[in-house]
Image (cartoon, rainbow, N blue to C red):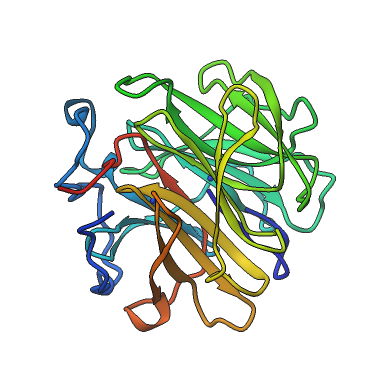
Length: 302
């Protein structure tokens, strides 16, 4: 899910996970064969290996696969979507169980221009336009897939946002990836990055609140079910993204004083801080503005 503000205001994740990050792939471009072994879910037969990882998108349009279990990145390539001018840049991203990325672009100079939603093949990087248009007052949004219930292989894409980035509230909608019709679910308590999982849960990370936090969201009303505060996250970020993976929360976070994105890991059951790693110190420095994770991601690591 995502973000860049200040530089340009904007935005689409257990025990046993390695806390030492092993670095980068020396920027080798890869066609998309992932290494998501160790999936703790029972739905592995429906998922490709890349769909079990986290995809990250940077401010220079570089798309990479991130494996939280090893802390490594693998570059896929650079996204070049049609119709986007030099001022259009990624705002949010979600990834479905077919490892297809859904990326929202917005014009960082002319805010009167309507954002555009693209469908991106994460193996070939082919980028196709969609017929999505803003509705219900939701023009900018974060997004994430969640299964309809635990044990299901049916997913729904949730989007959360509004006419502009606001720290006070967001409208939660569902969005069809076939008809691109949206339906309003309810109102959330703050502007959030959202990420779902194979347990049928929808989680939100609130980066603009005075006390940053993670919230479990009721998928039928937008109401908050539970909250974990995150005091380890301090200062106003200029770029951020969020993913739920392996039972934990993963926050990609960069303040104006940070040379690159820092990766924070929090316990998904308690919200407790676990580790932080600076991408500036492990290979290629990155400014990550989007993170997408499908419902094929492991629920736990065995």
